[in-house]
Amino acid sequence: MPLSLVQTSHREALKRFLQEDIGQGDVTTLAIIPPDQQAIGHFVAKAPLVLAGIDLAIETLTLLDEGLAVKSRHRDGDELCEGDLAASVRGQARALLTGERVATNLLQRLCGIATLTRRFVEAVRGTQAKILDTRKTTPGLRMFEKYAVTVGGGINHRFGLDDAVLIKDNHIRLAGGIRTAIETAQSHKSRSHRFEVEVTTLKELQEALQYDLDAILLDNMNPDMVRQAVTCVRDHEGGSKIVVEASGGMALDNVRAFAEAGVDWISIGALTHAAPAVDMSFKIHPA
Image (tube, rainbow, N blue to C red):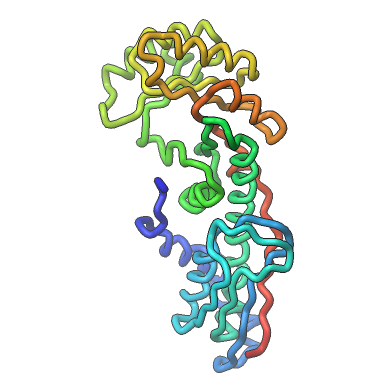
């Protein structure tokens, strides 16, 4: 998995999320709940879903109660049905109440992304195509959202602008043409970076193939055009080594047609920018 949450500053991010919600203190909970009261909390799926972020949800609560006892029932990547128990925790009632919304919001968001990603992965099963995400993520949540994509079976594309050279339509227009953009970029590129060019027509594809590329992004082409483009790449000298990616207009009802056109990657911004949060509740009871 390209993204490891263990190696990121996710813990500091969780602290910031809690601070945003708690502010100067959870006045309702502090007014009602005694400091020594114990409680049990259950994370329950309210709809079918792919679990993602359960450890993060629990860690969020642990930041408020270091003595939190956890009884995990499922792991990230598991498919849950409505009514299934994802995990149970026991600890300070104040901590569970105060951390409830942050933990549940994050869990619902990540489960939604993982669930949608899994549906796309299943839709192209049996083809060579891999499902990738994009940089269309929520500012501040990229590490978590891209993690959820991998839980759903997808692959991370660029994590940031420093990961790879990807010449897109705006670069081409500002540079004055595809040839100028490629030649200028190749004169500066680091060999440690993947070099990819976005094309929107077969003419642009032919121009791009005159250069040493690692990948070609076919943007907003229909499946028939994609099939022609894939043939063009594979027939080109050295084309068997070029990764062919398709993006734009992907949906569950058409993604398999793109996969069967022969592409290697299908990148889908909707995995992160349009995935609906799934219904997950956190029920708290006296211990």
